[in-house]
Every structure is written in structure tokens, then in C-alpha cells.
Length: 409
Image (cartoon, rainbow, N blue to C red; front, side, top):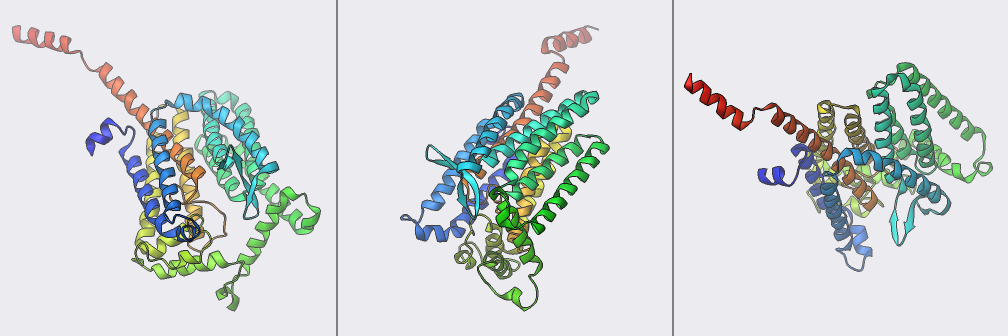
């Protein structure tokens, strides 16, 4: 095992172990949670085999990406941002809808979510712009404006169809600016502006009927209904299962059935009732089958990832790789936290997948790129340290000459 890690899997052993463990959990739980898909498929093994294929492809991509120097990742991110901008516009016009939201595009028979590419590209670009501020503090205002413009456009386009993704991405960008030591004054003004915009949006939704609003703002009314339904979820009616609370209620039942040790993999009952047991509510199935112990272990894996990326950031000698691994670690763990919060029955249904575990080709592949970039950064740090140590060490011939001189004396 040590030979495999040292010879083929460069980077950080802890991150690789977390990555592999999440993939293993994914295969086990998808085998159980995708039962409804298996019943509909001509070949009952097709959903699981497709998921395993995406994981295998993603692992291969992560392996390749972790050999790419992060300076090339830095350059490619701007191209990715332009491409994702075009695709986000396209998805609003001709995107394929699911659950009352247009989030997918189909090109040459391949269906994917442009928001996943946009998240990856934006985090890298923001890391680059903040690192330029750290290199030249006098130009903070210029780069801060650029961050706001780029983030505002991308997050704004995502917000029209996917509030939760936009909120997570916005929070990550803000955290990166905070960690990158953007001035408190600018961050304070930004926070006040965002709160003001949010309050104005809520006010408009309350006073303007949905039919008089442009269709692009329909998702805002959907979220209003979800929040109102959640706030009214008390009294005798909270135990009634209907079309509106079907997912939440069966998710809660799954959590209750799991108790401490679970009913063991393959014995879930709620997978047959949850419409999205294999993506949005897969954590509920984990809690049902593996109990509190299994759920805590999955949470532990994501926490290890967050802690380790923070450690890696402290090893970086320059700002860009430090901010890059921090941003990528944050976006994975925040998305996981939202999914687990919803799957446990404590939050509004958001549609956020559990990274590397939930079903979804685009999410799996892009998350694997996240891991590949993080591993690539630590690989370069180790390579630089080894090179510096080699340069500082005395040469063999000089050392032998010194030993001869000492023996002669």
C-alpha cells in the first residue's frame, strides 16, 4: 500500500484515503438507494453500473489532474469561466427542466449542469484575483471590484434557477475574501449591500403577484412557498404525509428507523418511498441503513477533508495555492453539510447532492476535479520542498573530500 501511494498516488495520503472511502460509501449506498431506478430500467444493474462508471472515470480524471501544475489550472480557469457564462445563458433559454427548474443542457447527447463548471472556474479565478491583492495591496480596490463583477455575474445567473447553489458559492467567495484579508470596510459594505438586496427581494415577492413578475423569477416564489410550509410545519398536521412534504417526511422516517446502528445496507424501506433517495436524500438512506454511527463517519470524512485542506494551505509559500485549496475544500464540505442537513429532516429541500456519494455524473466528475487540484497542489509543495532540501544538502564528492582531509589531519 505504501508503494502505491509513494509511486503512483502523489499528493497527500489523507486526502486520497478520504476520496477512496467516499467512493466506497457511494457504491454501497447507490446499490441500495437506486432500487426505484432499477425497477424502471430494462437491466436492473444499469443504474449502479452507470454510477460506478462515473466514479471510475472521475477517479481517473482526479489521477490525471493531480499531475497538472496549478499554474495551468490558473490559466484554464478563465477559459472555463467564459464557457460556463455562455452555458449559463444557454440553460436559461433552452435548458432542460426538472423539478420546476432549468439546470441542465444537452450537447451532442450529453446532459450536464453548467453550474458545476461555473463553480469550479469561479473559485479558481477568485483565488487568483485575491492572490494578486496579497502581492500588491495598493491595488486591492481594483481587484475587489473585479471579484464583485465576475462573482456577481456568475452567481446571479445561477441564482435564477438554483438558489442553494448560488448561496453556497457566494458564501465560499466571501469566505475566501475574508481569509485573503480583504479590508473589513469593503467586506462590511458588501455584507450590508447583500442584506439590503435580500430584504428588497423578499419585499417584492410579498407585494408583487407571481403572474406579474418575469418568469425568470419564478423560483423565488417556489422558495417562498417552501419557507412558509416549513414555518407552518407544526401541530397535528406535521405528521400528515402529502405531496408537498413527501420527501421530508419519509426522510425523517428513514432517520428514525436507523437509530444508532442502522438496519444494515440493502435493508432500507424508505428508499421505495423517497422520490430522490439516490441524490437529494441519500444521507437519509445512509442514516437508515448505517445508523447514527455510519452518518457520523461520513460527516467525519468531510471534516477531515476540510481540516486537511486548511493544513495544506498553511504549507503553501504563496497565496494562490493556499486560497485555491481552501476554496475547493470549503465548497465540497459546505455542499455536503447542506445535503446532510436536508437529509436529516432539518432543512428545506434544496436539490444539493452529497459530493461523490449522490447520483449525478456532472457533480461526480467536477468533484473529482476538485480533489485532483487539491492533491496537485500538495504534490507540488512536496516536490518543491524535496528540491530545496536536495540543493541545501552537500554534494557526495565534497563530503568525501572533507572526510579525506579530516582523516589526514
